[in-house]
Image 1 (cartoon, protein in one colour):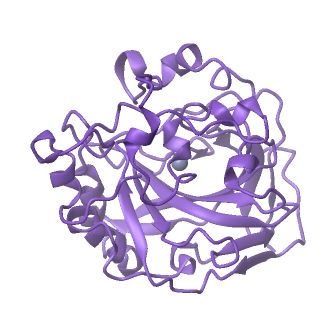
Image 2: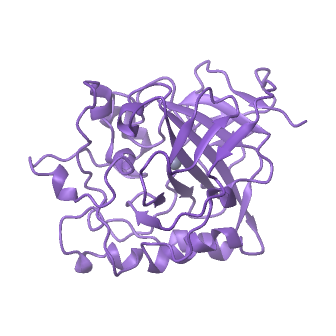
Length: 328
Ligand SMILES: [Zn+2]
């Protein structure tokens, strides 16, 4: 993604500030996906929302539009909203293992695991972190893409080791909605997704074509009266920066209790909805204040409307098993 150097999110998304056909100016006009890797056509059908973190950190959007074609526009309301994604993106969004879902701890399928989490480099503070408004969410990445340098997660019954790629948020216009997953039918005002790819594959481009390619850690956010200071570097970055003034360790974003979680096989929650995600949703939320979540609601999309309610409704379980690790 092209990264401009001087203006904050709200300024960058204003057309009067746009100097090129960058997606910061026109975030809803999606760039083409990366070409298929290793001959797997599925990788070539990825949406831009997903390939954002597959790309070199300073790629130009023009790299993807030279042939004059652009991927299908999508959003969260109207004729391009989630109800129409299965028609607009039939390859995967019409599938039977879609995300998000409602998670129900009364389900008989809940199981206990003794496979402890291994969070590697989660305590490492990088030299630099970049924050981006992709028109659908606020997304943060490390500037290094060297797989040996980024945080990894394993254990937790993931069945492999997964390297960190990016994290982003989903949030509501009001506090009575915003999360993608629900727990016993309960929604949260926001949900954080920490996206990782399976290191058994050489690149994330290879991984996203495989059913065990991605592991996403989902963390609910609930409202608290006090600011969550661990979120402050992100909140500050929303309005004024592209490089976070205060890089921080990913462990700052984890809930206190990571032993209790839900696990199921699902999909990307944005088009093209590839069914390649091993989902973990922690039961324990983290907090965010009203003032902090209001800053997310000030982000603007391509039409200069606030980015709010950027969550997909829950999808049918279709017989999938949901498992977890019970409290000990
Ligand atoms: Zn997400």
